[in-house]
Amino acid sequence: MIPNRVLVTAAILAAVSCGSEKPVQPEPTPSDLIAAARGAPDGATYLVVTNVIVTFVKPAVGADPAGFFVQVERLGPALFIAVDPATLNQVPIIGDEVSFTITTMSTAAALRQATGIAGFQRTSQANSIGGLVQDVSNKADLVSNVTGYESEIVNVSGTATSAFSAAGTGYRQAS
Image (cartoon, rainbow, N blue to C red; front, side, top):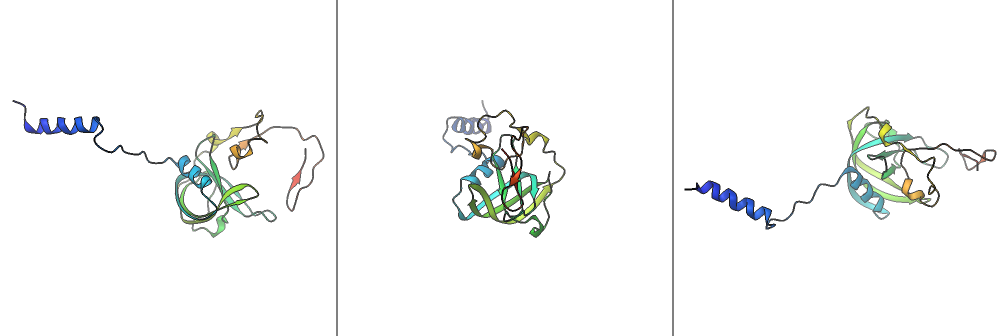
């Protein structure tokens, strides 16, 4: 004789394996959260972003705001957080793993950026960003697919074929 407990357990396992239970949706990855932010419309929003790595901290340059960039996979996606790091309760530095809630998204000169965040917190420090750097020196689509590389940490080697000249306050350009 089979104990009742074994029969009940077998019935539950059979029901679950036959699909009578709703499937469990996987939790979004940190890259999924960044992609959702990049795809959000401009304006007020509520997007929780967790466990992303700070890849660069940018000072204000000319009319461009201070902020920082986050990413978790070498091929992106990545996002610029246009919030002055000095205004946060913990100033982010390269290699920090951080979490926050995006409250406002915007587009500035085609750059997708979070312009408002809340609940910023650092969860770890001194994480290596070396594995996130993408070498784009031989990429043929840098101009045609600029959004595909936007805000990502990249390495590029090339040759300037003209002299550098002014390109707006705080910037220089060359061909």
